[in-house]
Length: 245
Image (tube, rainbow, N blue to C red):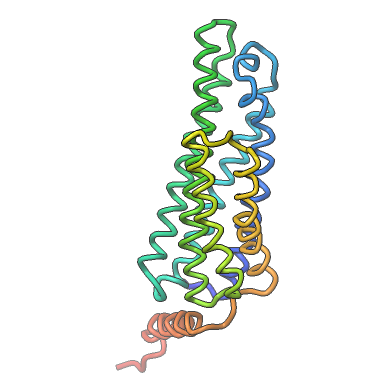
């Protein structure tokens, strides 16, 4: 199988992480009419095109989320296979919650009617969308992007360790803020949760900018990967250069 060069992996990883920012934030803004007043929306007070565009952005978010995990597998699996698989799994679980949220939003759009029952169902679907956001981007992200990826970057040395420590700390903070919302200690988006998301946001932004601009740092992990890559190339070329019998 063809292997990518280390810095190509770094830059693809960085671009994919920046795409997650470029898709998730606008999508949330586009969905607000549905989430703020689902009953009013299905009664004819909103634009379907706006919601469909938000759905498209969240679909691209799922693609870029998975890409940020898969692209690292060739590089990190020789360093720590268990945590690498854990990171990929966490990303997939996050995307599952996002996908469920997309279906909920599309369900609300499909309920364009004046029926009181439809209004009640739309409100329930909007609440489900909020829960998927809390459990996926609000809590699973703290495990995958924060704790697991922070630990992988810390132990591998691919990124500066102060940044990796930020990820390790930001993950649990984000999880705890989500638990606070879960147990109704404060409302979603209230000051405690908003403040708790800042470290994770800074960490994830650095995951996009640092690899894209500077690439991954050269460490033992990189050396092992490049040596294995060269061995794969040598084995692939061996039959072609072997002397004829």
